[in-house]
Length: 192
Image (cartoon, rainbow, N blue to C red):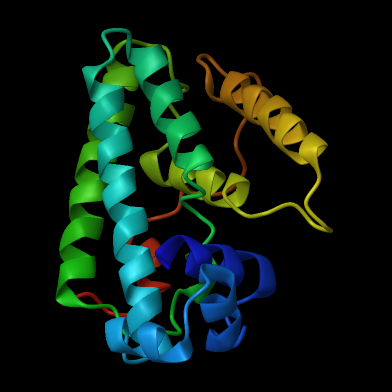
């Protein structure tokens, strides 16, 4: 049911009717509402799962002996999990304490992946954890138009280009200031 909800929301938008989720999951509306009383509750659960997957991906990246390969594994895993697909819901649902807690853990572990790559000199010094998170968010969204097999190949090609752009030393000066954690969290609401 959660997979169906994720697919419906990320392809049809967050205004998609709950009936579309039930249909995609092959369950009745009653089954859906027994598990999730409201659409917001369902979205909160999906966001929490997405953040837990980010934590797992970052931990896998830290377990990788090579700092660059660890960073690349983290990014590729998050993109494969479509980690950023739910970002457009930011500011439209109430963020639970558990969501804030897992979000902070995700930021903490992701920061460790990035710091390790910086310390090894393999990641551009001007790239931050939030730069990488926002990049993954963009790659996590579905391609425009009807799904096609070549979409995944194109995404992987562009991801390879983006990863090369993250490598040290970097050739182009990045414009503007790096995004702050305060700005990033404010999209979701005020943290407790």
